[in-house]
Length: 286
Image 1 (cartoon, helix red, strand yellow):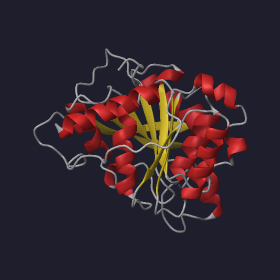
Image 2 (cartoon, helix red, strand yellow):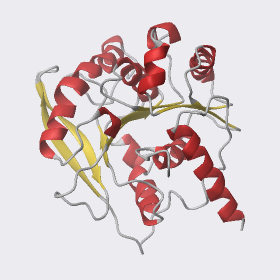
Image 3 (cartoon, helix red, strand yellow):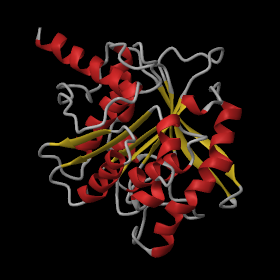
Image 4 (cartoon, helix red, strand yellow):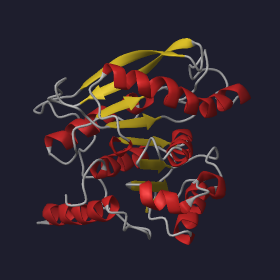
């Protein structure tokens, strides 16, 4: 009974998010125990490296691609671009966040739509490894450069290689910390490319709200979901809070989550992925 009640709550929130009626802060139930633990009895998705030539950077780059259990080249899929933090790379969500395990478990429970998940390296420079001083000026600047790499190089390469739906309504972008800032910057700045946007504990690279979304009316028409979340113990919460407050002021619906007792870590980010992924690519009737 308790489990059924939680599912009813999540379904109701999914309806609100997908129809863009969610405006105030909401509180979702905590992800259930075992949601990020590998289950040997279920079918697994596949994770593989994807090489693409970046004209932006001038070198071949690598992203990781997750395809769901039962993947078929004869079917077309929506895509989630999932971004890492300042000290990570294309492996951070897999190693630290067990993203593939979270997704596998959700698929097995039929809670998410079949989708391809692309986990790129958001540090768009020739030496894109997370080594040395990851906060060095050139490395921080490379996170901004990734917008061009993403739009002009990675997305076209993914759409050439994989059977994906090439429409904005079938593209989502989300990320943690530095990647959360990128997701808000790139997603809200390119509404003709992305309809679903999520910032998890977004970092100081997040643009000021007035720059982030200078045309609220356009966003209200084009966004399927705007998810903003942060732990209440996170020192970076002000960046999420100011973005949410701007959305409220300008009547742009968002789903704002403040995680009680949450710090700047994967406990928060995995919980975000668990809930956010269940809202993606679903019509309002679901």
